[in-house]
Length: 194
Image (cartoon, rainbow, N blue to C red):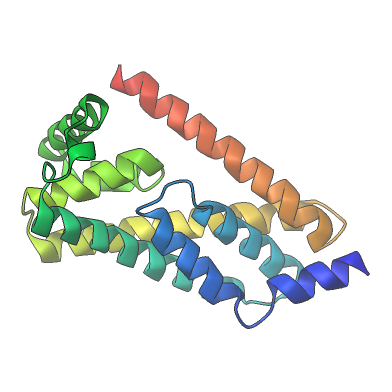
């Protein structure tokens, strides 16, 4: 009975739309569980077939691209120093880090930043403020978002394929694994930053 309730609530017609809203919102408010939503639906897709895994990946990639492009647009139209919070020392330090990284290799930075929430926000704002050529930026962001969506959904699907117990087990376990992998990625990025 609990499995049926979980499946019905997560596999409903609004699950992909809610996931997309969380992923787009996650571009601005990094505390939103965009990654978790993609991983959970990946696990659900593998255990129940609804929504289809390909739809989870396509919708997540599109939503991530839109969210990053919106941050780029804000950086391009507003800049990175208009609001008081953007002039705070920690924010300025993050933006300075983003500028140096973008100068060193945009493709690598956009792909890496897709997996690190605060870095992603800083990189996309600085990319817009730096007026990086929009078609090149959008192409790289779309590729990075697709890779990220494949990864997040695959984590959920892999856990669901390995663990018995259906969605009641696969969804929470895949979420915990995705959070753990995110923490490891954050730690690795911090170590390489210095």
